[in-house]
Length: 78
Image (cartoon, rainbow, N blue to C red):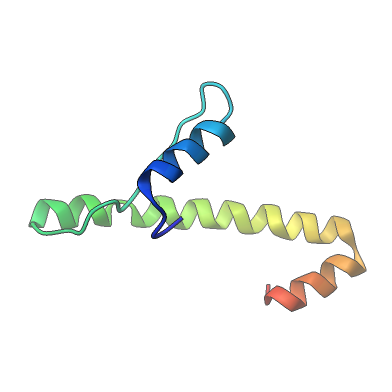
């Protein structure tokens, strides 16, 4: 959701989040000080974890789809 208008993003999140869901925004500003860099850098591992979870779910979905899933996986380079 990089480079999207902030107001649009908040309205989109409001519409899509489940009741009680949480929106986590990482890297909203440019790092200018040492503390900014430390805080910004702390997002590194959660991003890796979230992307790994997403890939596992995508791979499971591709397996469920069988041959069609393999064709799709080759198209998107998984």
